[in-house]
Length: 323
Image (cartoon, rainbow, N blue to C red; front, side, top):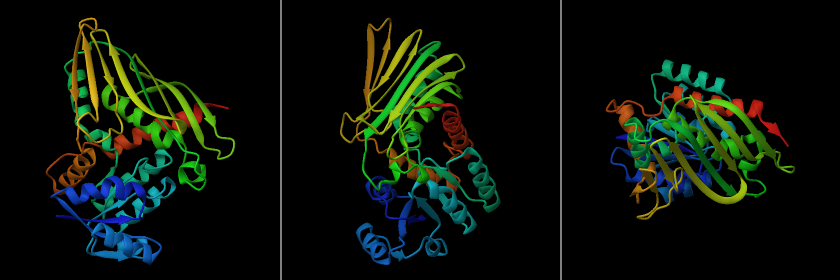
């Protein structure tokens, strides 16, 4: 059984990933670390972890930990991924893995030298709705793809939130814009950037709205993301023979109707609708990570995938028209 340690007491950990670790029969939560020992001990008690550490390095030194989950602010991901690998630990790190694509090159080298697995925590790759979408595309049910569109937005003007701090890797593109990018890549392959527009928040300095157009070998895609818009998500893929509409492609809610995929064919006269309710993609992700480490599965998300996704992000930042 894989023994997990968690670096930090971040909200995303106890809300999504730690419950998945507890549910999985393939792993257990052994340790948590915080720079505040009192907070670490309290968090360990709440989460049922056996050990609490007052530094991340102390957790990495523990022989009771096989793998670490890193939900730290984005600008700390590379540093602690490399330190975890140097300590002989497998790593599951929150997205985005890095701030620049070349930083992932360093992680690739370190992972190969250590003989350890590193995976970016893109849970959408493990949601069954995307398995069906990929099946439809692989079977050419849509014919030639002409157009895709996607968006992911939410509202956040909280002072002190690292997502509103550009020095910590905050901003809409890195936080939620990466989702339509990876979804487009999963469905359509590798893209070329056509153009991008980026609006910066005058107070925080982060990208609060990004609209960008990609070309996937002839299929045009328009994606946008934002951190000061009404919460919304969606994605569509439109081909000559059919169309796919997804109401919650990135972060579906719990419940029997949490994610719905409509597949329209025959000039929209026929629609096949599938609901993917109560599909725990976080649990699927954790189980897959454990199976990759045990040798029972090949990685569904590789470091090469992470680098390719980050390269798109880097290109958008480099070419976006800012205002």
